[in-house]
Amino acid sequence: MTEPSVLQHLIDISISLSVERNTTRLLERILTSAQTLTQADGGTIYSVTADKSLKFETLINNSLNLYMGGSSGEPIPFPAIPIYKEGQVNQHAIVAIAAAEGDMIHIPDVYACQQYDLSAARSMDLRTGYRTQSVLTVPMKNHEGELNGVLQLINATVDGKVSAFPAQQMELVRSLASLAAVALTNKQLIENMEELFQGIARLIAKAIDEKSPYTGGHCKRVPELTMMLADAVHSHNSGPLADFKLTEADRHELSVAGWLHDCGKIATPEYVMDKASKLQTIFDRIELVDAKIEIARRDLELRFAGPLYLASHQQDQAQVNLLQQQLAEGLAALDAGREFLRKANIGGEFMDKTDQQKVADFGRQTQICIAGTAQNLLSDNEIYNLSIARGTLTPEERQIINRHMDVTVDMLESLPFPKHLQRVPEFACGHHEKMDGTGYPKGLTKDQMSIPARMMAIADIFEALTASDRPYKEGKPLSECLAIMGRMKENQHIDPDLFDIFIERKVYLQYAEQFLKPGQIDKIDHSRIPGYLPPEQRYAMK
Image 1 (cartoon, rainbow, N blue to C red):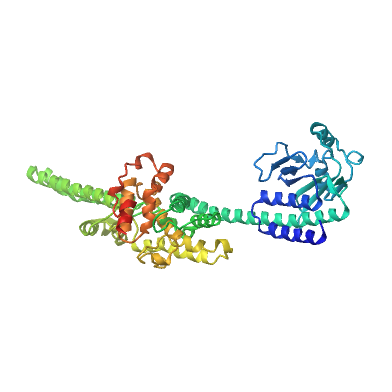
Image 2 (cartoon, one colour):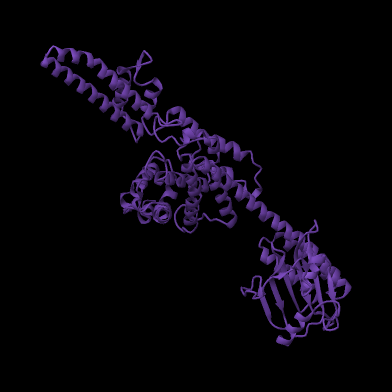
């Protein structure tokens, strides 16, 4: 090659090495470029394994028509070559010696060389009929002097004849190896950073898992469901979302967002996050209420003990019967009240005002005496908690739960995400927003949210409805979950187009078969899902 063409070739290599993302192709590109610069007939490039061995990555020999490894699809059958054996440099392989010593080794003629053990090369020649003459082995070291590969070339060609590698070509290969080593190191650093970031995201989910096993499962399942829905939309070629496509980089970004979507829960108190009943704090205070009702029973029995004894002593059977009836009715009322409070404590979809008033009346009208002091059976705080209309959280506790989104926003928006992950905060922080703008934390509308953020909202809701590991509810059957979400679609709480694909492509079933209990997977009739129409009807209406 002439000097201008060599220069241009090096420039082209530099550019290609800097943009290549696939390590296998990167190594192959290094090898083929070195062969082009030296007109070498064959060559091999090795990577360095964790146990200090040289793994064959790409092997090429033009005369033997060999092309293995790399992007060829043909596996290399040779085992990795150890750099050291029993603590000593492996003297039976030139590549091992070059790797261990960190120096380039040039052998002008394999059959005339006495310095190194080249019996393996000669044996290979006997088996293949090939004639190995010149060999150039170059260790690839990065800017810190660390070995990350070895490049070996065979049989340089000068003026059409196999010869030793000229000094100028050896320097070119050395320069190429150095450039390639830096590019390879940069690629490895990027991969390590990506792995670190993914690891941190999963670590946060694990920390939440350790703090609360209920939300920990949620943090793992939402990314899975989000990606299932994303893949379904990506492959959907009709309707308003037909143009939505995901690159591998987009998928990675969305996956990271999925793992981090509830990272703010790490600051949410466990007693609120895991509140399984209305009276639960560190323990379920219904046990304390039970104890106080037992005191009320004994107080009642003591109140009747004297009059009963007197009536019995006076042989007034009518009075005895009346008092016994009143005592039995009083005890039965306390027992009925206890059962009512136990049921109220569980929480549910709705508690009406009549039952709320019943809690207050029973708690304040029933008196007990402790340490000589008369007091209401239920404290104001117990009445307040037992009167929660929906679920197990008070409005104040609900605000604490909702604040996890503010914490999530603060955490993610404060991180200096690299360019290819800059949308992670927007994707992750929108799963409690509603399409009509009534959600939180920012009250965004559909038009203000990206499609992936809207996907995550559907995934978050569906996972929560179907989850069977919550302390305060059972996992709902599929049909009920889809009916609830259908009504949410009608009320403009979730993206209607995404929900239609969620149903049409049966993403719900794909998820259910992997994560739901068999008893939750019931028969689904799409025509009975509120707000859903099959594609032929939807598009006909439009």
